[in-house]
Length: 130
Image (cartoon, rainbow, N blue to C red):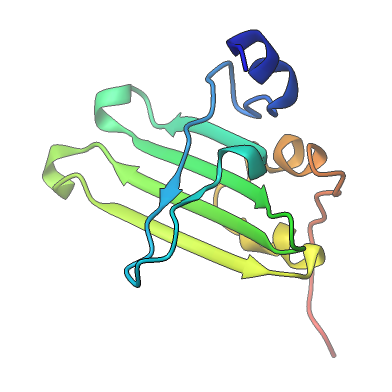
């Protein structure tokens, strides 16, 4: 498969013009390697902060497997040397697509475009249950 073919079937970056990366999950029990590249449905890759060397880098990705499961990742990398380049990763695995919008509770800048790529609306809930 050529690069031009790949660019036609892959989702676009909701935050800019960067191509997605391929993830390989290597199970510890000797099972075959799982490649998530073909399952990628939506992603956003962007920096928060005034400059790339003193900012937080966010990667948000939504994968749909061929057996009905959704994998949703949010990786936050601190680029500030004083914060020791911390990395935080959150993961949601669900068969209920409706749980996905609530997962992105912090960095909503690109959430509308990200969710639109999987045909979901971004909804803000104000208030609570009585």
